[in-house]
Structures are given as C-alpha cells and as structure tokens.
Image (cartoon, rainbow, N blue to C red; front, side, top):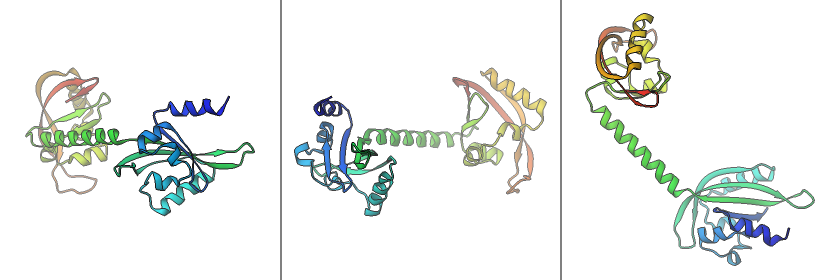
Length: 239
C-alpha cells in the first residue's frame, strides 16, 4: 500500500504520533500532534522532539529513555510537556523502536496522550475519599465496610478508640479483625451469621480488644462490648 494510506491511518488516531531518528530529529508528526501541541507538521519535521514538545525532562532522564529504546525495548511513562502557546499538560508517552528495511534500528516512534482529565478525575476521587474518611472519623460509632469475603476495606477512627486498632493498621496489615475480636470459633460464627443476614437490626456481642500496653505480638487484650448493626450496602458489602 502507498505511504499516503498509512499516513491517513495515523492521522485518524486520537493520539499524537511522533517519529524521530536516533538523534531526536522529527521525521513524522501526525495531525493529532498538530492539534495537541499547536505546531503544524511542516513546522515540526526536522526539529528536535524535546525542544518542540518542551518536554520537562532532565538530560539524564532523556538519555536513559533513548538508551532503553536503542536496546530494542519499549518505554512508557508520564511527564509534563508544553504547547506552542506556552501552556503545559501531563502526557502519557509510549516510545518504541522502529527499524529500516534491513532490520537496523532507525529511530523511535512515540505515542503521546494528554492525561489532564484522567489526573483531574483521580484527584477528585482522592479528595472525595478524604472527605468521606473525615466525616466517618467524626461519627462516634464504629463503622466498617466489609467485602463479601469478610475483609475490612474501610474503618473509621472509632475503631481505634474502642478496640485499640488504628484504621491504618487494620488496612495495611490486613488484620483479620473478626478473628481477633471473636477468637472463639463458635461465637465468631454467630457474629458472622448476624452480619450476613444484613437485616438492619442491632445486636450486642462481647469482643476482645487491645488494652494499649502491648506494642508487638503477643498483644495484651481486655474484654469489651461490641454493638453491631449490619446493613447490606452493595454487592456482598456490609457496614
């Protein structure tokens, strides 16, 4: 097929595609790269890719990426780049080697994707989770979200006040809280049976909790009360 056919295919992609020689001089610049960076193909071809995209990379980083691709390996990562108007944005980049008709390494082809929206969505989700955690931490009741396998995926600060187990400790160490609080197998089955019913009713159980004097296993424990209201809130999740 003619070269124009392949060029039209690359122009149809929704990502910027830029090919360079091994020195970083631009050989090909597709239509989406025009839109993303503000430079036309005629202006970009022949220029250094790091200069025209204003990639915010240290020389050592750029050299390491080039060296990696020269070994015939693909490289992917995120870094800031700049448009013609001076604005910048985070870009996800995949660089791969390409070869000439004799199988010799000829250059690097890179695909550049603007991930600004993705990063904003991630930041928004993080802020929402932080707000939810702050709200839960100020409720004077022990609240937990448990998945269908019985694993605690979220707990509030009241767990630390009542049981002596911090939220971070529970999540990071993946503690089996049910087993720790209810070591007797028969009694534990009653607790798990109540939770699985998820009928919205309250029940009282006696639990083992840390007394705060032990810092490492074996831990000192004391007896305490445990009042549970089990409500199903999702597919296999309870609080």
